[in-house]
Length: 197
Image (tube, rainbow, N blue to C red; front, top):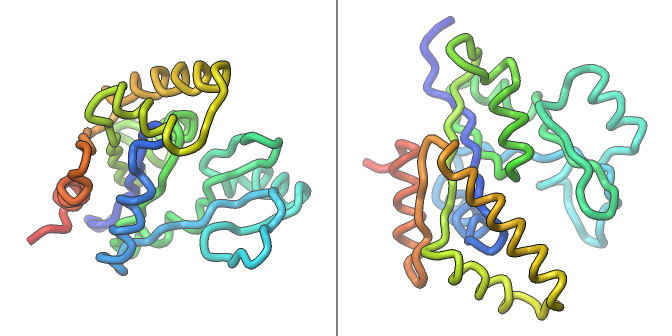
């Protein structure tokens, strides 16, 4: 196989750490990057386009699993299923493009252990970047500010954050999103992706 410059990049990090802001800015600055859609069985919301999701029925989702067309999938809150579609990713990598996918820790585990991306026999290059908060306290404060949360829910969220933060050491790269310094975090992600001159 010819040398490829294309790769799949997984962006991981706990909720509230600033991943969506970083991704939104990368989309704006780098139209050449591919941001693949997810397949989902959840209902389309009013006015929602097909840009972020490929809306499918439960039967169509089952068919995608059967055919091996999903790199990973999971049941998310509310019982809807979400999956990473191989055909939205692999052809773009083959064309030498950078494909960026935001995943949770479960998705990260599934994709890095998938035969396409696993070990020295991997068919496609994979890079993982974990976005870290400046401190756990800073992140908890962000979660509190986002929406008022009752004690039990907050305890559950904090436990989830602690679980997710343990995954940072399993990633290729780590970027700290310091308070008030989102531009620096974006620049660091660009540097790690090889997008800076």
